[in-house]
Length: 580
View 1 (cartoon, rainbow, N blue to C red):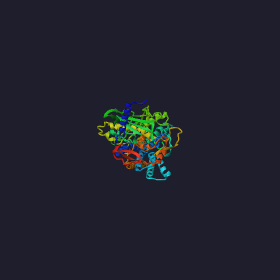
View 2 (cartoon, rainbow, N blue to C red; view 1 turned 90 degrees about the vertical axis):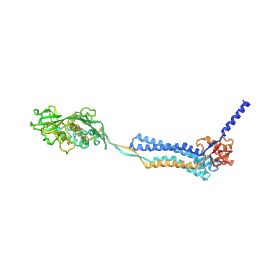
View 3 (cartoon, rainbow, N blue to C red; view 1 turned 135 degrees about the vertical axis):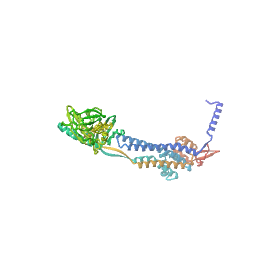
View 4 (cartoon, rainbow, N blue to C red; view 1 turned 120 degrees about the horizontal axis):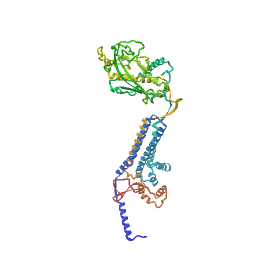
């Protein structure tokens, strides 16, 4: 169907309007165009490459601090380094591609080119396209030009830049270190060196007292636990000398806790769920003759009781003593201070005694007997065997007033006996003295445990366990090389950006990734080609060369305006002006 005359007039008006709008000139500024490419197209690629490089550095640092890498840690390290190295290479390749697309317009604007050269130059942003140009010039034509040299240099920069990320592989080593996995060992508490249950009653008591005293002396020297009962800031103690001995004070009760050890090669660490607690609280009393005073008040008289007290020394020595049973019926006048302490030994779950599994390999039926001996004997200047009658057990503990043994009750006598005279013997025992005595009594059982835990033989926790050889992987980073690689990549990018920007400073740079923009630029040249819609690029360039056509990127004057084109009559100048 044909349109009416009015329809044809309307169509002519519309076409005229569209043509006028399409040909409307607009102002172009090369400097503004350069700024857009730099800030939008180049800067984000450069920034992302820098961020990915920094992430690689963080990955190297993080895994190098882990020491021995497990199998999965090694796998994750490989995954992350390959991933972010690939991303850095991707950003470098993209950045260099943008620089190549900028460079091609400067090359096209230098001089007149044959159509084949134009086709090759337009493809140099891709490494394959750049290689095709070099191959065509250097191998087929055997002719090196300035364009060939520039493209060759760009191709080398492009390839080296993309592959430079591989230099990160030179910055670290995954060292394989042979080692031995030692079995976990625990102290063997079944040995007679700890508690000889085959000894007779008296020998058992005598031997145990000596051993407890020896082990307690070792524990005291290994885990010092000085206690200033007058200074609350000194009360709490945590992991004394790294031996796992803790202390806390709650009111008049002092509690010590000790975590037994497990051994693996040269490593010593607290064993799981093997903690002993010992707590004690004490009441101090003074003895004057046969009278007993507590809190400065007379609370009892011992003259008619069968319990006798050893004559310790005269009042001037100002020592601290405790109750003593005698095998002979004699009595002396005496002046002394003694303490009655209630001490409790509990296991990990705060059950009384040593528990069933605290002391490894110790028979459960002798644990109560061992606990009783721990509460009776320890590091004292004098230790007596004790006395057992009618179900009562009394431990004999004598503390010296001499200042040669730090664990004895030194420096306490002045506080205990200040103001005591024959006419005024009723001296009140100060609270800090009772607290100090509680400290000694609570610490007593654990000192022997600490010493024995160190000196007794060790056995494997799992029966039949033995040493196992293994290979461990440790990441060693060469930080000087890492910094050198990062700086080299960074500086290389900056130099390439500056070089291309300087070379292309006077050339109008087209949209680097638009085929429409390039197609519009080829409009004049393609106007010479009639048909050939299925021809290859080589055939089209050969046809144009046959017609003697040469092409150059530049501008031509169209009245008061300029037009950018790729043809033989253009000029290599792109001033700020009105462009069609």
